[in-house]
Amino acid sequence: ESVAAAMGLLAITTLSVTLASGRLMDRFGWGTDLAVKFRVLLGVLFLQIGLTLLSSAVSSFPGFLLWVLACSVPLRAGIPFAFSLMLDLVGPGERGYAAGTVAGLAFFLAALFPFEWSAGNFALPALSVLVPVVGLLCVLSVFPERVGRRYVTPDGGSSRAQRHPAGLI
Image (tube, rainbow, N blue to C red):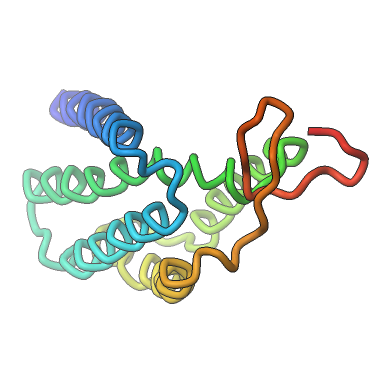
C-alpha cells in the first residue's frame, strides 16, 4: 500500500514538474535556443550525478522514497528540453526510428546489469553512463553551432535537422 502511494506521488510530481518546465521553456523562448537546451540538460546531469553518489547513504524505505523523488525532479524538468532536441537534431522522417532507438538502448542498458536492484548497486553503472554524456554536453553547450545546420521548413519555420535525401519532411 505504501509503495502504491509513493508511486502515485511520483506520478503527480512527474506530471507537475514536466508541465511547469515545458511552460517555462515556452514562456522564455528556451526551446528555440540550442545552447540553453544543452546547458539545462548539463545541469540536470550534474544534479543526477550528485544524487547518484548519495544513493549509498540511503538506508531506509522513507529515505529511499525521498531519494527517488529527489532524482525524479531534475529528470522531469529536463524532459521537455530533451524531447525538443529531437526536433533540432533528427529529421522529420527519422524521428520515429530515433525515438525507438533511444528507448531500446535505455532498456538494453537496464538489462545489462542483472543484479538484485538496490540503490548502492545502481551508482556505478549509472555513473558509467552519465559521465561521458556530461563531457559531450559540456562541449555542445559551448559550441552549439557545430550541431547540424539550419534549414527553412515549408511552413516558414526553421530546424537544425537535415532534410531527407528524397525531399520528404
